[in-house]
Length: 299
Image (cartoon, rainbow, N blue to C red; front, side):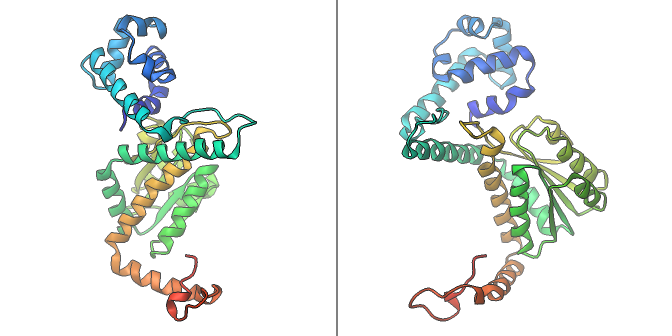
């Protein structure tokens, strides 16, 4: 996981003094990398001892090592010209070209950060559990509910018994009926959505394998989950962090989906063939093409 992304993800769960240091670094990373430990302490209204604690909390031996890591990361970002608009505010009078540049740059960056920090060993465990599951329950609210619904559709098409819920009462009822060998996946950018935490906790209490998809690896949701898949997110003009996290959440679950398909190749291939034929008659053939390949369906 890249350093600045990690600081951004963990700052909400840091003690107040360490959070001030994180805020000072994230506000101007390139400039912070040039500050002495005394300068950074003054800028963050903390002490040099707090800076040292901050470094150790992130796994660095001291401030010099942290400075090098921040400088290296900010230098790499500066070399990638498409990233110059990352974090830039979108103004009311910006052209659509500018809006497209900022939005696409942010989305690409978040997907890269998510891929860099994704623990593939955890992905393996989740995919293995889903492939063998008797039932899979997906739950999220607001924008996360749409992500859960998309994953439900994909898994159902592979004959994995899957349900997604956006209503807490329905989800809790389903969670209470889960058991050994079942899987519950809770999706929440903040990891602090009470309903998602409750559903995952209920699922786990009945023996189901619980999975959290969140941008906050130390959140309450992550604490109640057996397996945690982390995502990257960053707020921009007109888009909150939760809304911006959709692409990252979809990436994580897409990797899980493909991994499940690999493990159930024969069953999945047969299911795909059957579903393609089922909807073939609802798609107009491409001009000049005939035969089965001309009506694969929008599946």
